[in-house]
Image 1 (cartoon, rainbow, N blue to C red):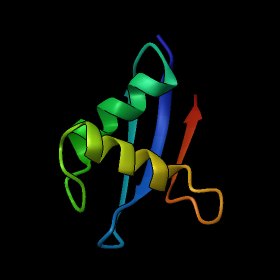
Image 2 (image 1 turned 60 degrees about the horizontal axis):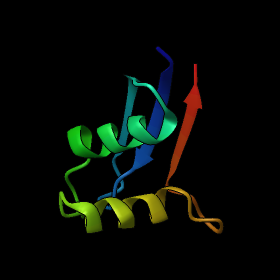
Image 3 (image 1 turned 30 degrees about the vertical axis):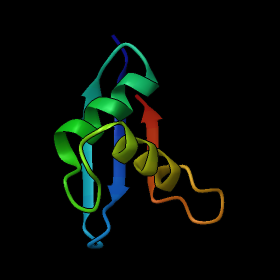
Length: 68
């Protein structure tokens, strides 16, 4: 199963970094959000959507994911 190194700058400017082992990049990001991101987002589909928008923002992305 692939492993993904995921880093994210939370709204309170702290860095959250974890290695996640999941079937796909999308499922790894969803798991990361559900387990490790609690500041600034609701834990529902809308919160996940806002998280993904911030994570992949083309101007200033708040996150990075790398398959390792």
